Length: 114
Length: 112
Image (cartoon, rainbow over all chains, first blue to last red; front, side, top):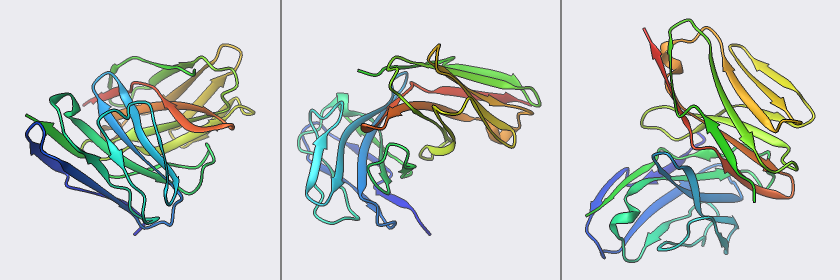
């Protein structure tokens, strides 16, 4: 089944404790990205990747890191999480860079930083 | 840069009635407008999209209309059913920029 998977689905942590949210897609997609979703603000892009070893900042990259060492994986790293990073996070992928390509979203990771 | 405004933020309709969600965009060069549906506990999923060379597109009970002059587009859902309850997001983009600019979302509630 074609899908985007994220782990963990739920995570409660404390300020300053490094964490990684994994994202994997099995559709051989080139483009992957991370979003955060907050009430009233919709989906805001954190980072995106156009292909292996090619990443770039989205609209809200502060406090986050990403890597793209393999085409299928695109982990999101919070080196020192803070309470303002409490949010619902989505990983997404699409076939290519065309703006008309459908984005396929993972099921989301709900992160709480105490 | 591009900005997409979406209204209303919450919409409650009686089952069987129609629902309309509206979005306006600022960049006149935008030419692709998708709508995504997010069910509870899931990620958004594309339900319909429209390109700027088309004024209307239908898919069963769902339709999207585009007014390029006024720079707004709308999602129409007819004969609403309980499974239509979800958060709906509009977005806009242009060919030269592969990033989607998202609206803030509309929570649609279908009352039995």
